[in-house]
Image (spheres, rainbow, N blue to C red):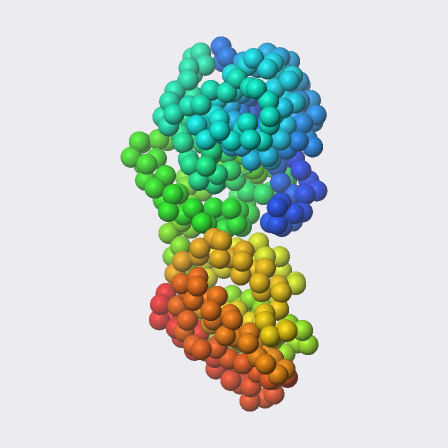
Length: 396
Ligand code: FEO
């Protein structure tokens, strides 16, 4: 996309990655963007760079506005390679002597990514940098979502450059929230569920601090997706809600199946849950991507896992998903397990163990079915679902 002036003398100069579909294991069905920003004052400041494979396009974008050599400062809000991959090239263009402002952890981590001697200037939380008529304030946001993460705030314009926070993996023609409306929220939710959920306590603390400091935002500019300009408080409120992990009256039945037996059980359990007026959806692991399932898990009260027994263990996709989900430490959930088997039937026991390890409240020892579920077993699965549904109604 073409660079655009998003506020007076502030340009978005990043790139659009239309074709990426797998962002380190996160499905990006509509691609993403790597946003970067140029601020013109007495000093010319570049905030963040882009993924390495886009470095030429990025420099072309900058060159449409200014000769890159005229950039005075580079700010690195975050070391991860989707924002720093192009740094070496950018620095060689703008000049190796130019100061790079980053967090303390950034100054430790950048040299571990690039074995080059750069003019790194670590900044403290709250430190200010005058760039002429305007001031940049640096806000340390450690573990949101890397140790080096920080925000940069353009004080006089009340513009927050928030790195990954408030982002969405979305590539489109729209630049601002006002152009896309509520259709952006599922992308923002998926991003939160798959990048930030683990750091919910830190996010709540950050939001409290922002309130205490009386910081106001005319615009929030994340490094991915659209810019929050029309209503920045919408995403702040959503982050407050998601970080509290207050679940909805909803269950997700996550399963895989070999000869459809566990699938028949999953469908009957889902019907039973729905019978109790609780929203429910079966999600087969080889149909849905793990990151799409995680998005649904985030605000569900019930997480019901189903697996056939394979070689005395779980079906492998369950192992993948449980490993992934466990990493986010989802809270305030109830869990239950089910599965079909031929002769040994360990899957339910193994799933229960995993649910307990995640501190999910186990509401039933689970339900097993040998080979193919018949009428009675399907009815038992339906009743099992109703029990789950009633428990969810009681707790939400
Ligand atoms: Fe968009 Fe943590 O990188």
